[in-house]
Amino acid sequence: MHELSVLAAAVDLPEETARANDIDKLAWITLEVGQASGYLPVFFEKYWPIVVEGKPLFDGCELRMVEKRGEALCLECGAMFDVMACEGVCPACGSRVKKMLGGTELVLKEVGAAES
Image (cartoon, rainbow, N blue to C red; front, side):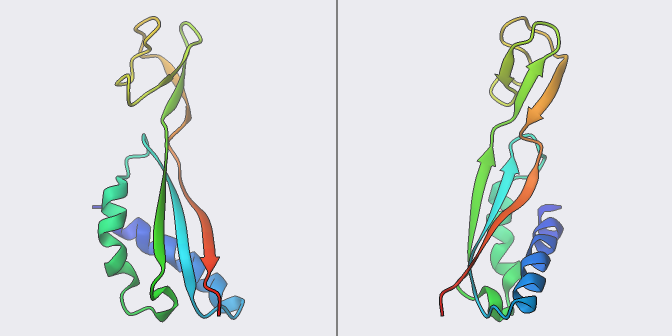
């Protein structure tokens, strides 16, 4: 349930930025969540109403989720593969020795101001 505290922190930055730029309402926030990040988008979506409750800046603000694929490079044979689909095992050679190339991130990707 660490998604709750991470989501609360993800709301703080746009809130500060909106205040500094005299923005009254936000239309959307986009979070980019890697499949191998340890965070589950479903929990971000579940907790979103709780985190923004009582914050007028976020009235009607949509939480958008972009899931990034967990990609890795096999350090044995050089194949690139989807870590989640292959359960961490290189489909070309069966090795578990890999370098993660993507899918471990959690990024506040975009914030959209509502039109007045």
